[in-house]
Amino acid sequence: MYPNMADSNRLPTEPYKGVRDFYPEDEAVQKYLFSTMRGVAERFGYVEYDASVLESAELYRAKGAENEEIANEQTYTFTDRGDREVTLRPEMTPTVARMVAAKRRELPFPLRWYSIPNVFRYERPQRGRLREHWQLNVDLFGSHSPAADAEVIMLAHALMREFGAQESDFQIRVSSRQFVQDIAKRHDLSPENHRAFRLLLDRHGKISKEEHEEELKKLGISPEEFAASNPPEDVAALLEPLRQANIGNVAFDPHIVRGFDYYTGMVFEVFDTHPENNRSLFGGGRYDNLLDMFGEHVPAVGFGMGDVTMRDFLAVREKLPTYASPVKVYLAVPSSALAPEAMKLAAELRRAGVNTAVDFGDKKLEDQIKAADKQRIPYLIVVGENELGSGEFKVRDLAAHSEKPMRRDDLSSFFLNL
Ligand code: HAM
Image (tube, rainbow, N blue to C red; front, side, top):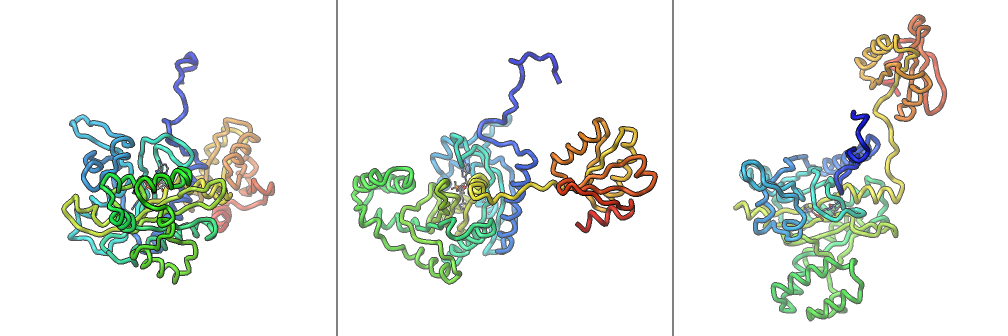
């Protein structure tokens, strides 16, 4: 646009720090992730909802929703022109809680809802952590039953299987906030120490075993006794139906607590077992009191699965789908004078429902073919004088390097029946 602009004045082409551009091949992976998520959520009877990325900042500061790390350090918050404090949602749970509370009297419970929002967190970008990610949110409202806890875990398991994972590829680790509470009570922990205990558990895996044990001892908790704990009642009650559903990779793990303050019961986290990617993939839990901040009481349980961690999971196992262009056929022309004829043929094909792209003949035929191939368009037709005159075209299969002749009238049915 500015051919004489000095190098130093050029704008960088990189995206903003910690966010991604999705070139068509990346976008195709994204679409695959989302359609797999949608398919499984809907198979379990969940329906899709959505909301704006903009939320009032107070939603993340209210008692109950607060997560100090997220509200104070990790949100993108600004003041709008009307002096309102606005936050780009860092997660979907407060938003969905707000939506359910707003229509509590009209909505049919148990309510099964899912969404795939993009969410924003001001984090230090690193593997698996970015400043914008998409997150499948699956939530069930209106049931206290451990069967509801079991259902969301079954759904998480089914999702992993649908992505092509074997049970040995991941582990579902479950605990309960009840368990943390019981230990705190038994050891008579002060509110600060209770919180310190929770944060310590959350850091498990990020610090050494020795350091972890040392910190437990400081709180007066015996590491041996802690490690040998039995599952709390609510966890035991949900492990049974999961066993009956033949889910073999779920187990109680007393270290699972999760970061948010709003969880009240079962909490779980799904871990990748791959040696190069051994970390948490996603998680969730029960949050029975979150809607109380809107003056409504509705028990809830759900989870959030991020696209970044799922991509990594699939990439290390070479399970990402190979790219296929949505364009079926490319029409090339030996000279630009024939472009209008090619456009006419394209219109015929499109009317029949065939995705067709046309070249305008600005480049040599050979380069047009290269362009089609580079876009991984499977077929190409050269629209030349002879073909137009005879009404017979050669359909080239660009991957197989083969071609076959075809009458103009037969083209659309050929592409539609591929
Ligand atoms: P969360 O653990 O903060 O939970 O996020 C859920 C998942 O989103 C994570 O396990 C991870 O896959 C992904 N994720 C989180 N932060 C990032 C990031 N900075 N970059 C890439 N991926 C990320 C929640 O957000 C809860 N609201 C989930 C929930 C729904 N609980 C009940 N219902």
